[in-house]
Image (cartoon, rainbow, N blue to C red):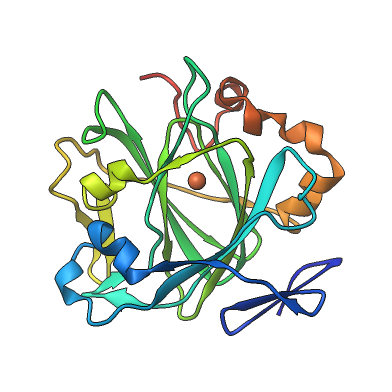
Length: 242
Ligand SMILES: [Fe+2]
């Protein structure tokens, strides 16, 4: 399946090819996810949980990085396939860097959470369902997890300022996000001391992959390296106030 018009990316059975060449991913294994699974004891054997293809064309020479992630369909104890979850770092005195996601294939559920005075006190929790053609912006200050909601693999891409660092520790320490998503629906994670009700938001429907728009007009995405600017635009009803 060709992922991006005008670029020869092909996804086939969880492998990714560019111009006919197979690309080699960084693999996140189930053993890397043990600390964030709802039911780690239900894991039967180790293996690849998802595949991350980092720093891809057409943005290799840009200040932003373009990555593609493939998450196969799996479940552990009824919890659906998901990423580990992380927060981004921040420029001094500002909220953390935002990020753009775009769905190329399958069905995704993005879980976003904003901590208050500590990581265990969540002051805003947003769930966004997305499918082919949808874009989601992770607002400044939010940690995030992606769940594969579909019946087959999920293929998504992200665009992020290339100086951004990810921190996985808060999600590991609290055993996942403030809600887990299972075949029984959302389950509150009891390791958090404060968790609000879930706020459901809609993604942004695009006419094509956002990376092409980015490549044509990088300056219009300057807010990716300026969280204060991203706060002014306002994404998903998020507030940048503490
Ligand atoms: Fe991220």
